[in-house]
Length: 360
Image (tube, rainbow, N blue to C red; front, side, top):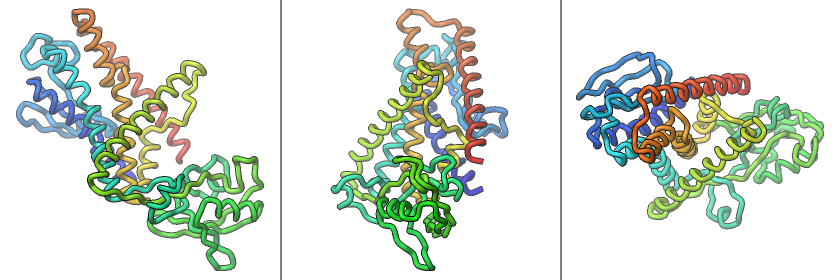
């Protein structure tokens, strides 16, 4: 239940920030905003303030700002989206993406100042890191770790033998112990949510050089803090690197779909994100901030893709209309957005079903 509440708060923040960007830009451009909604209809509750209806809707995974004339109707009416200038319309469309990126920057600046847990892969990071831990990054399907219900972001504190705790300080310590006791039943001690747990674990015979006795990938992590002045540029740089990484990731998925007809990676939907949000929250607030920043950048990149019903699809239509010197028919524009929205809903349903099967 706590995971669901945290997830709803995270989604609410991400959506409200994104839609607030559209809302503010539209108001500044003199456009009439008819509705500012959280979630998708049917509407649960709504109230009107200064000509705009603010609504909370039944389907919580999303949100929208409905601007007068945004689908091509009433193009010449005062206050309509279509009556705005080219740059005003572009500004309204990209403002949501910009706000999500800005949110990520702010969260990463705060995280850099308060302390973020990062992987330690070089001597410079190791010298600066505090509170080092051995953490699980991935759990292999069908492995002893999955059977024992070990989870990503769990901290491995050690192995208990004859009542004594054999402490593990590095991933190599874990590997050494596991290979020395392959095929045996042992007790692993993990940290999760601020508490330690003793978990029975039956180690397997290694399946290969990359599939060891436990079935996990590990990393040594530590907390890094920076002065406020350094946190600013590090937060901006980190957000930029995440943006580029997400962009490359989406391109890889698209290329794989074109070439092989498969996404080529494990795509996660709302249920999966909710599960990962709960795991991040259990590690700590700073880790949750870092995770939310990554999701916010993902949302920014996803929305700027030139797909109908997304901000990028609307931007593509605006640019196309500018280049051809005339507007699309309102009916054509509505049909394009309706088809795109239907495809997105079907994809969300498919990924959600996959998440339910995977996680539950």
